[in-house]
Image 1 (cartoon, protein in one colour):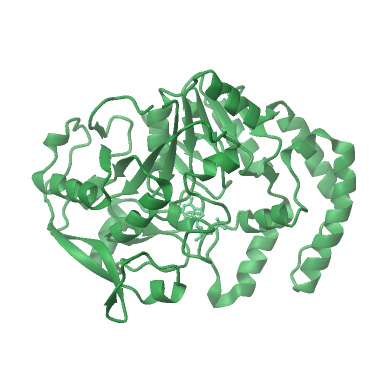
Image 2: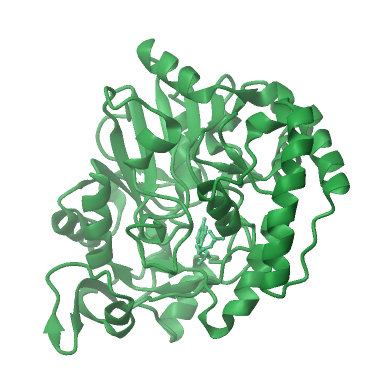
Amino acid sequence: MPAAVIVGLQWGDEGKGKITDFIAGEADANVRFQGGANAGHTVDVGNQQFKFHQVPSGMLHRGVYGIIADGSVVDPPELLGEIEGLKKRGFSVSKLFISDRAHIVMPYHKQLDGAEETLRGTAAIGTTRKGIGPCYADKHSRIGFRMGDLLDVSGLREKIDFVARIKNAYASAIGVDVRIDADELYSEMVSYSEALRSHIADTPSLINGMMARRKRLLFEGAHGIMLDIDHGNYPFVTSSNTVSGDVYSSAGLSPRYGIKTIGILKAYSTRVGSGPFPTELSDSVGEHLALKGMEVGTTTGRRRRCGWLDLFAARYAVMLSGVNEIVLTKLDVLSGIDRLKVAVGYSVNGKRLSQYPSSLKDLMSAQPVYREFRGWDDQIDEGIVMYRQLPAEARRYVEFIEKFLRVRVRIVSVGHSRDSTILRGSASFF
Ligand code: IMP
């Protein structure tokens, strides 16, 4: 298959950046199709570390096109910062294309994100405050700005005037201190127009054209399936669809093309922000996972909440995204834990659930049903290349995951670098 999509099977931070970089070496293009600067993908190459928020993580490979497609939201100052950072380190961004249909995160979206979170009080979502929710809300209210608007600066002036009226009225109605100065905003947007114009393109034509020529496209999902706006733990979710099927609507990929789904699963669970987390640990094991796994948010620097692997949630994510292969990350972090637990179900009010629940109330009171495993003491050497070199207990853990999810674990990742990646089976992902 010439196309593959990478999705996170948990609440984000599964290690998608590393795997995207790993697979992008055999791709012609790497496409981000949803989300924006709220995502944080980390890639380690040699002794250098790269943190991507909007630029597709595969762009470290020379010659690979990077595409930011229609369903993404673009934060121009943050994107320009990332582009500059890459250029300074000697990487070319001449093959970076941004959809003219992608929406722009405006400065007031970020202000409103913070202000609305404050108004929510104890019901705050714990957003990244990157303006994602307000930007997608304006897109759906049809008062958003798109990257294509930067190509027509005279039309932009008119649009800013009427949108400023609406947003200023909204801000004063909810009593928040946000005021748009139309002249200032216009000059800011003109500067983005000059800086980004050469990257703006009709990306669905580019994507479908490449598919027709049998090029290899790697779509890179952001966040995680449990944060999907429709299927995740609403309202503790992000504002875009994160499931694999979103590639078709958000990137404009024609459904005539099949796509392979690669699901990324971390060997334990983490979550940033608020929301239900039945397997959360507040004991020394949780501390072990946070410290050894260096569980600090790439985008916000917040410490992530940690817990046991939740296979009941992962099975739901696998179903939603039709996962063909799994990449299991950070298995090395579990070394040194005596007994390991994995959630294989939930019970609510003493009753075992047959399906993953949609109700927040059920999720908040769910008690995980655990299966226990013997852990392993030995540290897993980052240099291991063969699956059989893993401790027997670690292999048992991996094989239980495969059996429970009914999907093969194709890669086991045991460290940050490109080299600490154990491949099972053929080297090609397409
Ligand atoms: P937003 O996407 O900034 O609106 O945040 C909504 C929720 O999604 C919050 O709980 C965030 O912490 C979470 N979130 C958004 N993006 C990511 C990500 O890339 N990794 C982990 N959590 C994320």
